Image (cartoon, chains in turn orange, blue):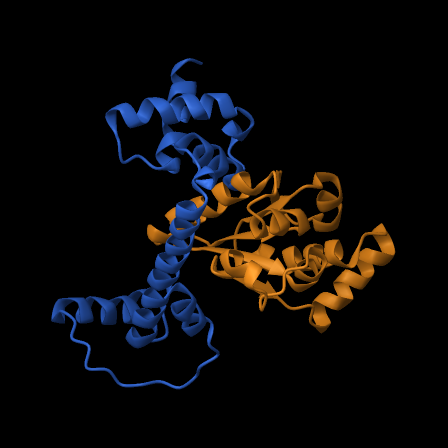
Length: 140
Length: 132
């Protein structure tokens, strides 16, 4: 059976999906549309957003403005005790933001399940926080 | 409607219900065999529920996007855009050649109008291999 691919969103990817006025909106929508096509073909694929990224991007699922992004089957990843430890270590070692550290911790926990793709506007920082996990980084 | 289906799919609901849903006997037997011999799920019921959930998630996701495209026609990606996105998601070597992918997308729909993004990437890959 095919290993499920996991797509992780960073702050700007979330903002781009959240607002149709965002200059990168069409680009990130295209990625989600590919996910939708593949799901229709029963290819396993999940889109995740680390909770700290959602906070940084201002995505409140209760807000009417979040209607579109709320329906795109994007799953929250909690900053639980295990990921908090990994994220704290990344903040200390790399000096990155809490949201970026949570991305690194999230990728670390899903990388063993199958291929991971990270959609981000900051390739360098994401490469640093996800190292050594094998990740396909899509720079938007 | 999308919101209602979406919230039902998101519900943390461990309650189960018996249904009177009728499925073909051969399909039931195939599911039982797949569970017993291939270990694809812990039970035929779990396999059925997982498949139904996956299908509904795909339906809701596409319905949300279609609704968005109706309100924002400029947000609808072209096949070329989708081919580039598909290659990027997979880390495909042609992700760095968007022009080739876009040309392939334009070419493939001439003979295969229902081609999708993955078809276009494959078409581009074949063209790239043929010209090497």
